[in-house]
Image (cartoon, rainbow, N blue to C red; front, side, top):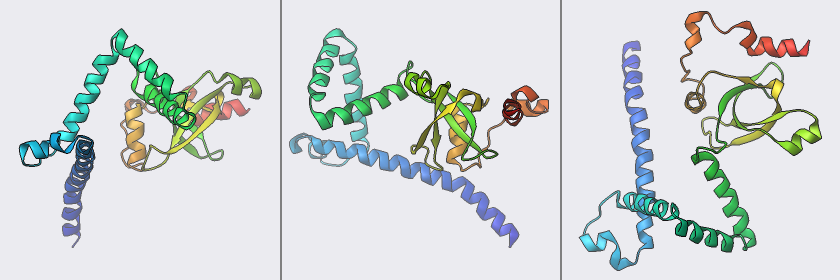
Length: 222
């Protein structure tokens, strides 16, 4: 019985990730295909070809995004976008939503943005409990002026969905930077702690005392 259980688990480890991946991709393709409904009925590929071709919506969306990128890369395109944004920012509710989403997108996708920079450890929700977080921002002038301390913005994601979470403003001395990459940190969170990343210093006997989070925090308290 134990042998059968072992084989079933081994099979699940192969098929379950594959099945979830296929399901997510199918949902994405189906969602993109629904963008074809924005076209006039006479122009829809299903009508022109006489049959449905899955994935055309995704290709159309990528084409529109690419063409838009080409347009806004030149001076005339930037002026048109500036005019469009000027119109949107004069609409109260739309302005708040648009500017908020734009800032998030620019933060994540531009090279000079302040997306997840480093994986850090903080003691949260109380001393002695360690929480994985991502450093997102520095130079919080007003916060630092009012608190009298240098603080860093960190994002604490939820598990297994890292797109939700909350932001903490943590004093610099209470943050311990880790060696793992942002991708490794996200995998650790999404897998609920199962996918533990390899650490180069494991073969070197662990971290030095001066780099050990617990040791460093304890030294600061003394």
